Length: 192
Image (tube, rainbow, N blue to C red; front, side, top):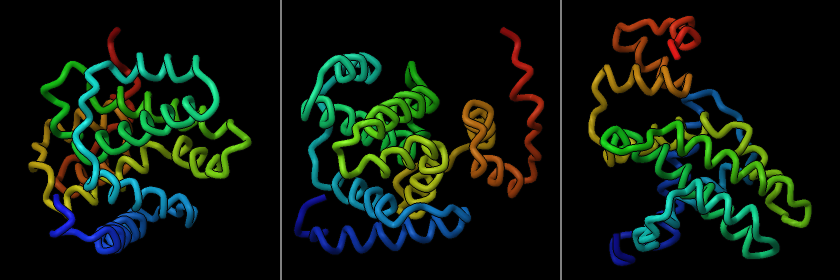
C-alpha cells in the first residue's frame, strides 16, 4: 500500500486497535513493549518491498547464528519478524508450499530465542516474550489478518490440520465454534 493510502501514524493506530482487540479476545497478556513491537512489525510490512531472498529461512538462520555483532542481531530480527508475519498473516497460503506453518514457527521462535540471549540488546525481554509465546502471537496475527480480510476462508480440514501441527488454542477454539471438538490424544498418537 502506498503512503497516500496509509500514513505511518494511521497504520500504527490501525494495527494497534486490531492487535489490542486480538490480545483481549484471546485473553493473552502481552507486555506493553512487546505489543508495541508487534504493531510496528505489522505497520512496517506495509512499507517494505517484498522479500526477494529465495534462500530458505533455516539456512539464513544458521548463517545468522554463525555471525556476530550488529549483523547477527539484524539478521536474527529479520528472520524472526518474517517468520511471525508469514505464519500469522498468511498461514493459509502455506498449504501449497513445501514447508508449512510449523516450519515458520520453529525458525521464528529460534531466531527470537537467540535474540533474547543478547544482553546488550534493549529489546531482549521483548524477543524473549515473542519466543516463549510464538504460537500465541501467530494466533494474534491470524486474527488481525482475518479482520483485515487479507486471507481466504480456511476450510475445516485445513484448520484441523493446522491445529494438529501447532496445537494452537485459537485454532482449537475455531474448530469448536464450527462444531468440531479437537481430540488432544490424536496429536500425540501419530504413526512415524
